[in-house]
Every structure is written in C-alpha cells, then in structure tokens.
Length: 412
Image (cartoon, rainbow, N blue to C red; front, side):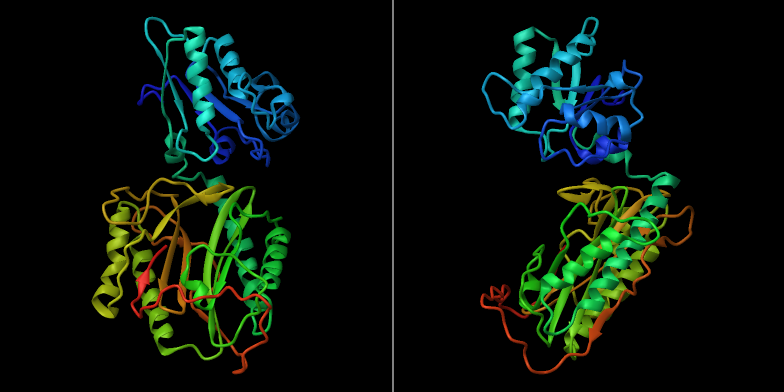
C-alpha cells in the first residue's frame, strides 16, 4: 500500500478477506461485506451483516470493536436512498480514515471483482461529494492477490491436505465411471468424497465439479447431466479438494472401451510435455520459461500447438472460482518463480469428438530442486472396459458435436 500511495484499501474478494483476517463464512450471497485495511489502523476492519458478526468473532483474530455492521434492514433492499456502502463510509469518516493533512486520501477498491458492484462505487462517490471528503478513489484490484502468491509453510500444509481430498474425489469418480452409469451419479460420489475428506474433513470447493463426455467434452467448463455414460467415449473430470478453503484442483480423463490411437498419442504427448514443464518449474525461472519448456516437446516432436495459458496460482478459493488471478504460464509473463509458490498446471486438447485433459498442482522448491507435485493420482489416460453396444439414452440428449474439423486445439 505504501509503495502505491494507498491510504485505505477496501477488499471485497472473500479469499482476500480470509487471508487478511481469517474470516470464513459463506455470507457473500448478500453482497457488500468488506475488509478495510488502513495505514493508521493497527488491524483491519470487517464490515458485514449483523447476523454474520458472530461468525467473524469465531473465525478472525479481530477485536470486537473492529467488527462492524450495516443495518439488517438493508439486506437485498435496493432503495435509492439507502445502501450499506453509505454506512461503511460513515464508519470510516468517524474513525478519521477519510481525511489526511494537506492532501487527498487515496482510497483503493477491488473494482475488478465480481462482488464489487457499480452501485457500491456510485455510493462511495456520492458519500464523498455529499460530505466534502478529500478522497480520491483508485483501483486496488489484485493488490492483495499478488501478496498471496508465495505461501507460508502453514498454507502449504493446507494445500497438501486439500490435495489428498482431491485425490480421493478423483478416485471416487474413476471408480464410478462406467458404461450405463449416469453422469450425476458419478458427481454424487465425487461430492461425498470431497466432503467426507480423508483424515481431515473436506469442504465443497470454490467451483462446481465439471464433467463432460463424448463430443460435449470439446466444450470447456460444462458440468454434468443425467445422461448415462456411453462406451467408446472419453470423459473429462475437473474436480478439486478443499481444506479450510485452500483448494487443490485435479483434472483427469477416462475412456470407456478401447481408446482411439490418436487419443493415446495425444495423451503421451501431453504427459511428456507436462513433465518437461514441471522440470522447468524451479526457483528463478519465469512463467514464460515454463511455457517454453512445455512447447519444446510437442512443437518439435508431436506437432500440437497451444494458444492458451497453461497454469495459474492457487490457494484460498471461494465461489465463483479458485484461481488467484495474478500470474499465468503463458508467453510474455515474466513473473519469477519463487520458493513456496503454488501453481495449477493444466492442459486440454480438443479434437472433433473428444478431448484429453490433464493437470498437476505443484509447489516451487528452493534453488535447483524440482517442484513438489501434490497429487498421488497417476498422470495418465484412465481406460476402463466397456461393452461395445451403446447404453439406453435418457429422453433428452443435448450432446452435439461442437468442433466439426479434425484439427487439434489446446485450450484451458
């Protein structure tokens, strides 16, 4: 904040709020909960609904006087003359956070986050104008996110525990995937494993489990249906394990029956490329170096190309997603890998009627040591026996080919 000249930082990202204070509540369904950090405060302020104050007392290190509320009567109320942000601005003014000697206060907000609304910004500007505050509102997006990039030893332990839960969810999925089984029943097994966890309790991850099969798998980010799984089709599984909100994603592909030779070739190419990238994920290398290492294998040997990012940092995750929104494994990203960074490395190859997906979560170690890979699930194409005859279909089948050509496209 000092480097950027910020006096007051208003955070609405639930992951940043957790990282700053420890607050852990699924209370962002009612917007306008914030953590405020200021240079003249000895600890952050937490603003939210009155009913969530008890949760803040139980999950944060904050003193009771630093846990503030706006009236419960404003929940989901959209009156032109009332808004939670007006109350927060009044609290900040009472504490002297909106005034500075001889200059304007620099107030930064996470403007590019899903939980910071246009109405909130309008109310901030209206409060400043109405009360004659000398405050300049600036964009503070990702200021905290970049600080989360290097994990503490305690955070890495959370990620390791989350990885064990992730492996359990993938094992449940792969054990359940079979011809004639409904997609939703596979995800039911996944959710049971994700919540029951391992030796440590698991939690529902920040993003819904994603599962698509056959030609549907060529479309990114689809989720399950009630369709039964068919033989001679691949199924993509994008799952995650979560422990105390630290989220460890995992992606694997299963095929029912004898896989096409092309699919096996792509799977081998991706594994070889991923291993090269993992070997390059060492302290001192850049994100771009890892990208180059991945492509040194497929471009030279297999002829496949990729235009999308290959990975991103992960850690604390709240809905709607688990990414940290900072660096990426892509061309031009000069972010230097540092010890204790945690990355989700993910690859997706799409053909006309199938796809192959694979991922790994790694921790950068010090010096020239190779990274620590958190998953125990094998990085392979999982082939399961299946009958040749198709299974009976559900009444409504929405599966349609989305890519008509034979060209391979790698996307995240």
